[in-house]
Length: 154
Image (cartoon, rainbow, N blue to C red; front, top):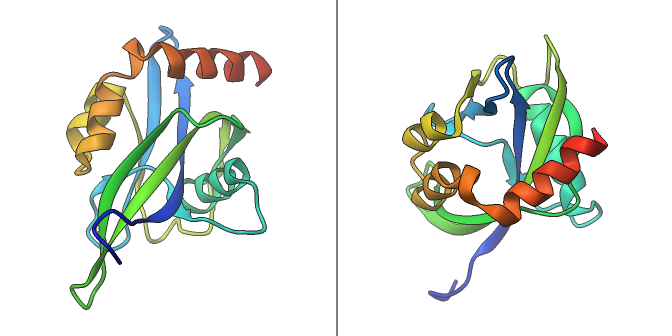
């Protein structure tokens, strides 16, 4: 892979609002290192990207809800494999308004999930681009417009 090339992944940013109206985002731990991440996975050619985000949120976090067809961010990270090789990934992030969390889901025994404020989540994630996005989410007018429309549709 050349220096400017990457492989595509899709992520969901599951969210809800607490009783005080504060935004909370659902994070999961990775299966390999246990670091906090957003539910994400490889692009599935036969699926629309937002549908892939919906599937990842369900499989990795047990989250069910409404996903925007419009992404709100991209971030890059280097995916490490057990053999110490890595691949550069560009992750497209789709917001999801969570309607319910399943008690049992596909990766329940492999991951932990928890709700955080975007600022808390920004401090927990290792991916610098994702951290900046989460920290600036409330000031990101474009992302907020997509989230507002999604919230009305949910």
